[in-house]
Image (cartoon, rainbow, N blue to C red):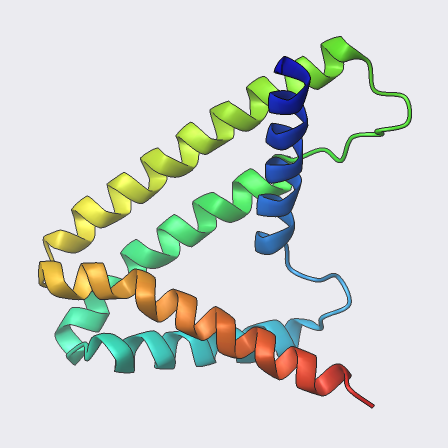
Length: 145
């Protein structure tokens, strides 16, 4: 039973980190273009006024930067030579990262609640998911011959 828990934890760690990882093959210009599209999409979906957007984006970007820093700290394990102790340490590190991500999100949502309505704060998650879904759809279309 413990083995199953460890395996699921490790797989969820890797899946979660791979979702957030920026592809290395993507040029800086492409990443900047996607980020500009993200800003425009979320601004439109939340119907942010210019004064709200001025306060919203620094808070949101601080959150995203915190997530990026966490990704940058991640070390890819060698599963072929991993010992049980290393696996346990990896699981513990994963749990600590999940706690840090939750704290980052809690801080962001608290700050955002002070600058936009609670409805817009709740709508943020939906807007992010829709943008990511559309981005994935476009990437899949682009890959088709």
